[in-house]
Image (cartoon, rainbow, N blue to C red; front, side):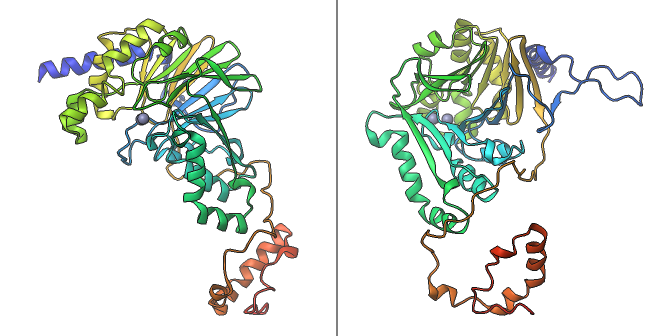
Length: 415
Ligand SMILES: [Zn+2]
Ligand SMILES: [Zn+2]
C-alpha cells in the first residue's frame, strides 16, 4: 500500500515536471475575493492566436474499439494566420471537434495519415454535420496512395461517396449539392519529405510510416519558424528519426504494454505483443525515438487513459525530455518560445456557430429524390398546423418569396 502511494506520488511529480511550461497554472490567489490570475484551461472561442502561434487540440487519442470517454485519433491544428486543419478524424472525434465551436466553413481541410477507421471514420460526421449546419463550401481531403489503386485515399473517397449516396442525393436536393463535394488530393505514400501542401505560408511534407501495410504516412508541418510533426500510426522507422529531428512539437503514437491489451482490451496474447510492438510503437520504443530526435515537446497518444501511468514509466525508461501523454481535449499553444499546455473546458452540448458566409440555395435542376407516390402521402392537417410559425419565420428573415407551401396540394393558408 505504502509502496503504491510512493509510486503514484513519483508519477505525479514526473507528470508535473513534464508539464513544466504550465507550472504557473492557477497562479496564486492572495485573497478570497480575487480571481486566479492564470488558469490551466482553454475556453474555446475566447483566444486570438498571435501571427506566429499554432494551437493544437487533441480531439481523439484512443483506440479503435469505441467508448464514450475517449475518441479515436484526431488533432485539430489552428494557425495564427487563420488556417485550420484536421489531422485524422477517427471514430467519435467529431464530438470533440464540435465542442471547439468553430464555424463549419473554417473546418474544411482534412489530412489523413492512413485509412484505418480509427483515423478517418468520423469524416462522415464532419461531411454531413457541417452540410446541415451551414457549411457553404466543399471539403478537401489529403491522403496517401497505396501499393495498388484500391488501397489509396482516392479509392476510399469514391467508396465513401457510393456508400453515402442516399445521404448525398437527398441533401444535395434539399440543401445544396456544393457542400457535399469532396476534393481529394492523393499523393505518393513513398514520397520522402516531399511537399504535399503549400498554401498561405504553411508547407506540409510527408514521409512514409511503417504500419500494417504500405500506405500510411507521417506529416511534417512547417509554419514560420515552427516545425510540427504528426506521426499518425507507425512503428519505429528511419524516416521519422531523420525528418522529425529537433522539431518544435512532435505527436507520435505510443501503445500500452502487451499485457494491458490482454487484460484490458480483450486481445489474445499472440496478437497483443505484435499489435503493440510490431505494427505500433510501445512506450520504451517511443522514448528511444524521442531521445534521438530531441523535440522541444513530445506528445504520446493512442492509449487508453488507465494505461497512462504505466506508459509514462515505460517512456521514462528511455526518454527524459518534455512530454505529454495526450488525453482528449488537451491543448497546446506552440511558439518559438516554447509550448504551453492546458485542458479545454468545453460544453457537452455545444451548438453550431454560424460563420460569415451564407450557404448557397438548392440547385433547382437536381433530381428530386421523392416520387409522387410518397408525396401523395403527406397529411395536410399536420402540415397546415405549422402555418403560423412558418409565416412568422418568413417575415423575420424576409424570405416570403421562397415559400414552398403554395406548391403543395394540401396547403390552406388560413388554417
Ligand atoms: Zn492504424
Ligand atoms: Zn490507430
